[in-house]
Image 1 (cartoon, rainbow, N blue to C red):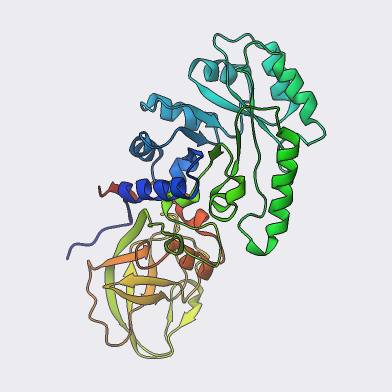
Image 2: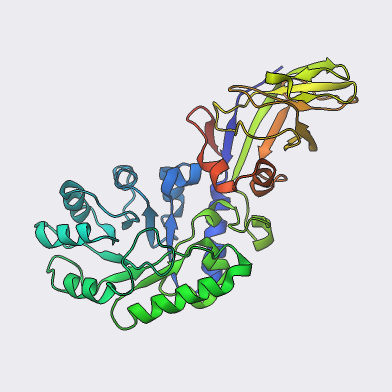
Length: 362
């Protein structure tokens, strides 16, 4: 008997392969590898180190994420997708070669008013249709002109945008309108442009521009809800596993777990697996959500609790305590598991807590 709790085994070779897939799809563009949210749950420092020879730029959401990468020895430029939010962050960014996404007037005014020890590289966020952050097309000329007058900003500036519906093939016209709007606003006014997230990299080759921003696809997961990464030549980078910690006989008509929400229709064997919402496995995962044990699919039975979940092994099961359980990864795509749960694979891989151990297999 050799059981263990939840482990996320990360293949760095798969991450490198997935970046190469993105670069092959956009051969004339440079790669801005997105490692925000702890590299989507895969370990930001380790993933960035694995990609340092292939990525031209790294991108994160928060200032603290960029600090962690720099302190960990990552030397490439790092783009702050949310920009900076006080003068200390701005001054630190200038000294540490953080590129800054500027998406509101308060940031522009701070750039105009704060003396810096080194010039900063700016990416102007244009709101081409996402309507979350960014300058409107009507504001763009004013913003470009004001930035051009700031001596401590590297000239010319760059521009970027974000697609709202590129992961919905039936909404192609919406994305094409965003592309056209962005190109009209930025033509002849900026140095580099970046439009494409993972969905854009795959589905909109005419928008690859100077830089692409592969994020979820680096980890072998497709942004398209009805597909999976292997459909596009991607390899899952994470095998999220645990083990059986108990096997018991179970009678027809008996419930399992909190509130007795699942009742067995037959005599069967119930397996208890060492994973729960304390590890980040979603509590809302319903009965019927698949896992792999000894190469075969079995399904959740009853509610996921904090530390354990139960599965219906079947009446003829020979599985034993200590056998490994694959929650998602090679052979059971995170995208499929997410569809059963009613969420997206992005959430599965980023919501893991600190309890599961990360292991790097190559």
